Image 1 (cartoon, rainbow, N blue to C red):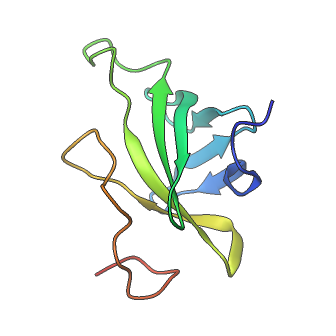
Image 2 (cartoon, rainbow, N blue to C red; image 1 turned 135 degrees about the vertical axis):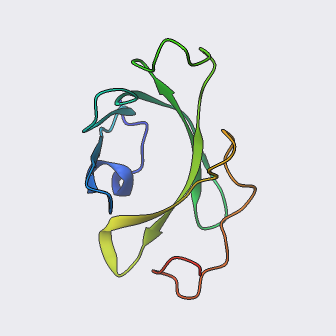
Image 3 (cartoon, one colour; image 1 turned 180 degrees about the vertical axis):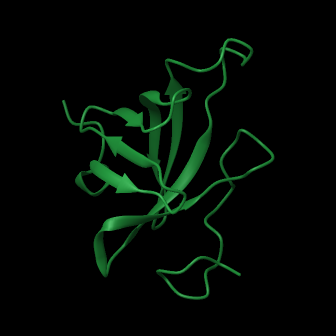
Length: 109
């Protein structure tokens, strides 16, 4: 069963050295010890991006069981297998909209 759009499926190398792999059924795995496996709980298409919520299956025991971080993802048209991720650092919820970028394929300053 496909739960993710094709452009979100596959292996993504992060700038900080981790590799995040997402599967068509919504399962994921990251190359770190904790907070590294789970599934995409929700995925909502917005205007030009998608909003997701993740459910980890190996979060630290001290985390609340309801920890479901959300991020916004936008496909980069010129780079078929790269995405831009917008994540709120001081909150568990996703941003209310994708930030305005200086270029469609570069982070905001």
